[in-house]
Length: 186
Image 1 (cartoon, helix red, strand yellow):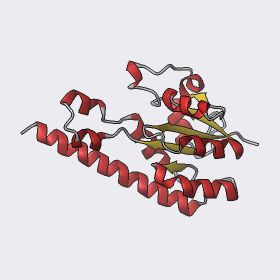
Image 2: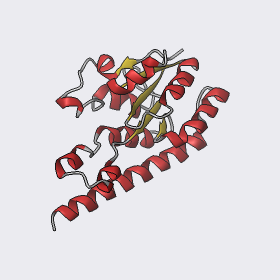
Image 3: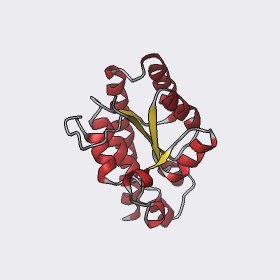
Image 4: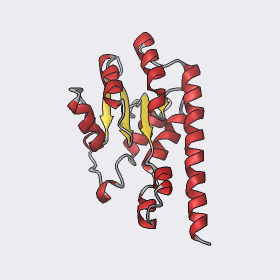
């Protein structure tokens, strides 16, 4: 039987330990970024850091964590290439750019709140929703948990809906960044 994998890389860690427990109990191996992995480990759930899985450390003070061909390939594979280790679930929520706007953070901080890897994870998983479940926020955890516990996987109809939501989220995120940068040029 093929190994099933879930990538978990979240800013908002609410509910992530419970979700990871469900994945683990249903036989999914969990790959995670370092800070998210800490939360998962504290819940006594086995987790492999993405840097260990890829053989590449997080770099630039954490700016680059998930941007790696082994992660992108695992998410985007159509399961035809046996040399690619597939990833079946991607759980990701983005850096809180809107919250930075609300508190009128300085420009340097706003730039750091522009998520690149997270948007890439969401878009790749949403694109490949025929094979991958994208989970773009904690509000979707109950539905995904229910599906995983009942079926061991998420039905195509919900995968499609979650993909739509992920693109909606990244679209709004990019629009907020565009508006912010536009305001900086005035």
